[in-house]
Image 1 (tube, rainbow, N blue to C red):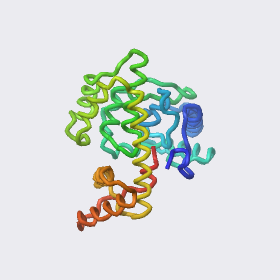
Image 2: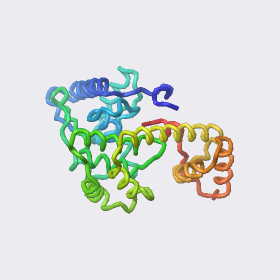
Image 3: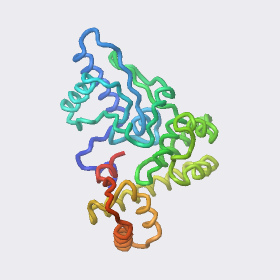
Image 4: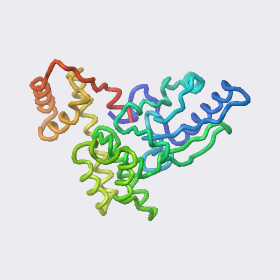
Length: 274
């Protein structure tokens, strides 16, 4: 399932994202009154990439660090209602994921001010790469985003090195200990690759294929795919020739590994969402 065929999901690109942020700032200023205090948000993930890079044109969600405020929440909902957006079009749900670190605010940089009341910042490049590696999801844009960021910096003769990212990993997460298995070595190989353009295309294609498979798996066996087993499902599928055989083999594997404990289901929306 491609991003452009994601049902009722809105697509955010650089042009309309800036427009929605302007509308959000305007709604906040109206709600907070003439003496509205200036607020600051930090864009992360796909939104940060859309605002700063050209290799990726769109995202389906806008993740950000947001100040806790009922007025801010109301402003977000107002913009959603006026523009036919999901009520959580701008959200901080990522703070419940492994890639969140309370230190992110220290490693952001200024992007733009809207309506004199909203300062928007984005995560610095090497820290954004560290966050993507920490997620390391093969069915989303995580690795292709990493490669895309490295590629654009390399083209601009401003390379992001392994040492820079290693330091970012230490700053945010105190090391690689909780990262997906093998991701550190994989990143070393990415940095050393002489043709990131080819690697980017190959990785992006692989992510799209993996997403398609997971959507088919979830459709055939609703509720079987879990956050804890998604990587095992993908790995098993890599070694099984046909889609039918993949589905049957992975259903059997899940049944064999079943227990009384039921980990959270990976929802279709989570697979599709960027």
